Image 1 (cartoon, helix red, strand yellow):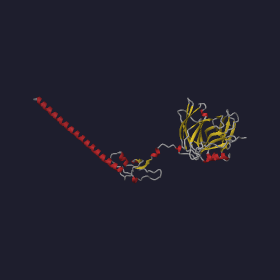
Image 2 (cartoon, one colour):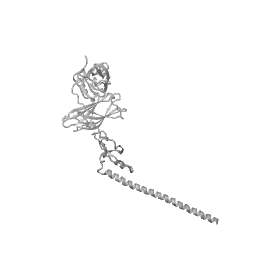
Image 3 (cartoon, rainbow, N blue to C red):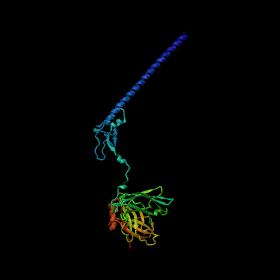
Image 4 (cartoon, rainbow, N blue to C red):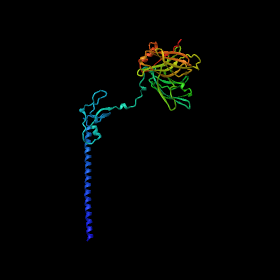
Length: 410
């Protein structure tokens, strides 16, 4: 009897536990169902809201216009600031034209754009690579421009010259058939020649040439490019030439020097009695800097043995005829027509341009003066020397190049 009561009590407790478990499961299931219903309702509401925002943005009457360029948008938090057009100085948009951002609702990218207004666009043209203007910008009086490259093979002692192209050649006749002779000075007996380009003022050469030259004498040599035109009588007419001293270049097989130079007309005037010197002057009024570029000399009259002659140019700055400072070029051996192409700078205040002057002296073997020229204001010079100085002053930051006759003091 007792055993039956125990079994009955156990079964009742078991039924109670099952009922509790069913209630708990029902509650949990109800909660999950409510959560799912809430999520579905939220997603449906969000979809409807985003679609409305998108339609508002794409509406033609919307202040945000669709443009081909990329729009620049002011975020809503900056709406209270006054935005000014940098080009016209006018206010871009009044506060009354601003969009009103809703205070509630989910945030999204479309929602952010709806609360913004356009103040300008990004111009894609500003982000292009700068174009090479060497084929479009030519100085006044240009008679042509030549492109070439130079390399040097140390082991084989070969100077590699690539003739690339020429542009804007000035032909004496209606058509032009150009070609180029390349010399390695001081040897003017031997040269290498390009092919003739028929009826072409802008020839493309793309030809390679090789000079055998020792590394010991490489930087004492100068490349000379002579551009000729072949006329109807098969005569060669010189259009212009380019001088390229190698001493100022770093030449190696791994360092290909690609350059362009404007053609220079052949100098038809004979050298002066004691020779001539060519140099450029430039004055930077902002920096107070006077720049001298010693280019070359010609027709020098040596005092002793030509082969042993070592010639350099000494550049001296004077003020009120008082010596201030001097600089000198490197020496060139045994040539009456030396090439230098060296640049020097002097500190000169703009107020001193009326009292300062430059003296350029050509000196042989450290002691013997072959000639001298002085350029400066009216106080010290006349003629071409005064014209050169005045042109430099009137054209700040521009190199002014001229020839000057050397004078020997007696």
